[in-house]
Image (cartoon, rainbow, N blue to C red; front, side):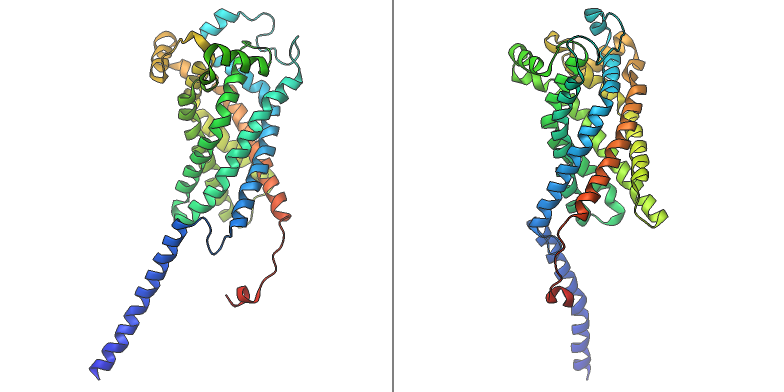
Length: 333
């Protein structure tokens, strides 16, 4: 009798172990394959495609609308050496309505950021989906932080040359984007297009990670409190807050990045550390916060537009996905 009882108990105790083994097997299978039982490869590619379209749409609207504010911010951060060299006549921040300049230049500068934003969201969305399946719900912030950094790293391949050309034009070193590219490459080599790459990553990877983490976490908290999805104005407000807060936090990194990018072949700074030391020595610590007002306003408004357009476009694309018929096997599951 005791033997029978022992056999039954053995079966009972073996059941949880078998379940744990199956669960561990499923987790290991997830790490080994891009596709899971819940998501087919086609759905993964659709996520990338929809992120690419939504990011590009949001990017072009933001860049075109906020280029003037970005120009003001760049000139405030450029430093005294730029002002002595250029001695701008007339309106200090006159942009858009002088000889050799036209609104078309703004659109031309905005074109590469379209691809950068598209690439960022196209990488961010599938990375976020995968990481959210790995981390438990209470660690979703880590998934959002990591996804933002990964997306920013991918987009930096386009962002950095774009920023170099844009900021050289904003500080009146060149009259057009094609001239800027040609002269930068001829004087500084191809690496001139990636001037300040290290400082750019130092600013943008934390910025992307923090901004998207704050945005996603605020959306999660809002949805839990309201017990419904956010509408477009609410997404815009959350995006504005996330952008403004992140912009203020990362202003010193932005000042360093701007100084390194606009110095050109003069090589006033030898690197990130030398740049920080020179700024503090010659201008004092407050110089690291130059342009914080326009930056917070620019990124706050930009965050509102970007995330509002992004979520609206994602929802538009999701509503037009083909509806797959439910099979008998899926019904049984």
